Image 1 (cartoon, rainbow, N blue to C red):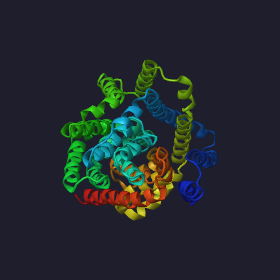
Image 2 (tube, rainbow, N blue to C red):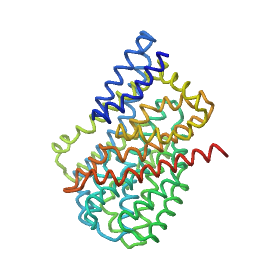
Image 3 (cartoon, rainbow, N blue to C red):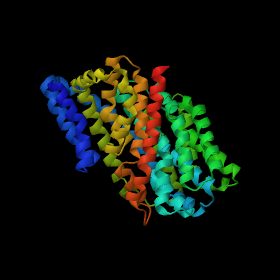
Image 4 (cartoon, rainbow, N blue to C red):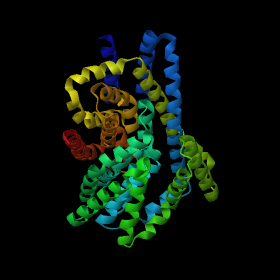
Length: 437
């Protein structure tokens, strides 16, 4: 019984600390780590050192790719490409929708950190939307790509702490998100003023894209975003808008080549991103001092990932989450239908799909093992639910509003929340349908 109570405390702490007390993810992670260390030492003694080291290593690997992706965004901004893109953007509803959905998703795939909302929102405002509506569209539009952010960091983190293969987990997540992606595209298109005809057409394009590229796993959002953007701009005669995106296109191509060459380790990919970032800054003669001064958010996030990963591994190895899973078996397979909502809640509370996966991924795996359902499917539903939960978190809304002058954050949150919940419900319906097949 003690294991269950400690496990429930571990699961409830993020809700209390982050939602009620408004603690940061890092402070919450430290509190969770302290609890996990104390309990693990009591149960495992010095045997807790092994799991702690495992968590540190896994967290550091995920943090490396996340850090490199943010460095590349800083290099892109310092080189002047972001300013050039802002100066060129204009157009009607279809172009706005393409920016919100496909550019937002593409930027999420290669950067993360809330970059899509912060970059795309002012672009949409420049294209004629009110700042509040632009924020809503930017938040909603990129949410489909969140599990594949920063070259798949949320999914990789989930894979590392649960020991479920990243390839299958990524592919399953992408497949589950095909219908939600289409719905998100339609909702975003209408938000930016696209006609019903364009909204339906773009939704069909999104569905076709995700079905086609799902087999690419954690690179699926990168490819779907790039292809969708090119197709829409080509059909609308706006291909000139792609020029400021050339560095990101080059990064996508280089990472694809590296992967095809068999160099798929996180360390190699992180090094590749960092190398291209350095070349970008050097070629444009950016200001290194201003570049270095912008690193604080990336360093803080890297530390947060390591802390949360260590806490999650210790919580798993000490048995507290397994004890909760035993209690969840009382719901049987019916709990599977609610997994997307758990992922949604975790990401909403923590502000990050990655944090949600690190905090609750092991619990979901333990449940799947006890009940005897597919671990990969349960974890993929959790991952997909986190994708839409993260964009309604107060932290993400604040990041998106940071590049706007007068956006109403509260109004944006109220508009995004019911739409995001509707997408989460679609995921729950998918879970019910798959369970009955």
